[in-house]
Image 1 (cartoon, rainbow, N blue to C red):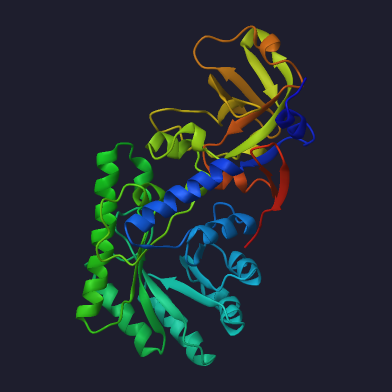
Image 2: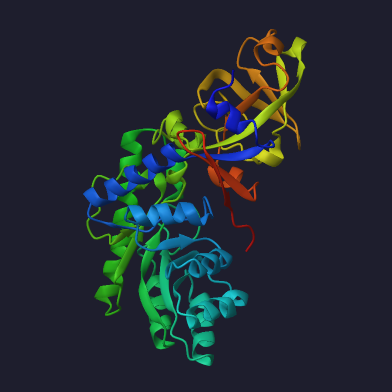
Length: 382
């Protein structure tokens, strides 16, 4: 006889995105407790989930404000009652009217820049519409992506351009994305310190030049969970921590039982001579993200678990077509896989990258400890 959990999940069409609520709440409380112990304001990056009930849980735990990656996210979460929003992607000229509309409605929207050219465009648009945008300067502390290096002359040039143009210089922010390439506590702690020191140094230079810099914002999930001290920092940002994934497991900041997102899938066939079970979760469900491929453990397209969430050691989604996934055992092929996992068996697949896998679905099915399911809409688009 099926358990209440099995009976509940059997009602879902597959593939489906599941959020394990006890795991999610544990992750939220773990991160918030760490930020509280460091006496730092925490501003979660909600691009991972793009889901209002999850954001509300983060705010209820003590988060202050949110970070978004699209202005559509900003619009949605502002409509849902969140006013303190940081849009942490370099401001493109064509999006300024959308940002202006949000501010005119009462949203405390912050935008970012990392060049004199961009600062000039923001200032010109702001003056034209009599709007003093709050602008933060993005700092490059690890050569990972965008931003101005802490010692570059451009840092002060941007600051002066914003103030001269009538904008508000709200602070500096950085993201140590290269922390995703590390996998030891020592390396992660060193990267967290590099991130902190670089961003604080940028703030010190601005202040020494007579420019305001009230906010010093740092963060990534690995560095937020690894920082030994955050002197000079005013707030921390992190996103994927709320669900975690296999990349984070390989980095060493979570364990498999803390991964709150999985894809429910059904066995639809076999290639017994190859040791394969065919499931209905292909790359359209899991995403094309192979983030573990360059790490110490490659999980293919995901780690297989039983329907109740227990890891099936050695069984991974080793291949994927659009709507077909190939589940196999690492090493020696399991020629008894058809008997072990017969057609109709439901499984859960842990994802490589929670942000990418979540983006494949219009909704999450939130799973309570007693097997109760609640459907939560997930935001799509820009």
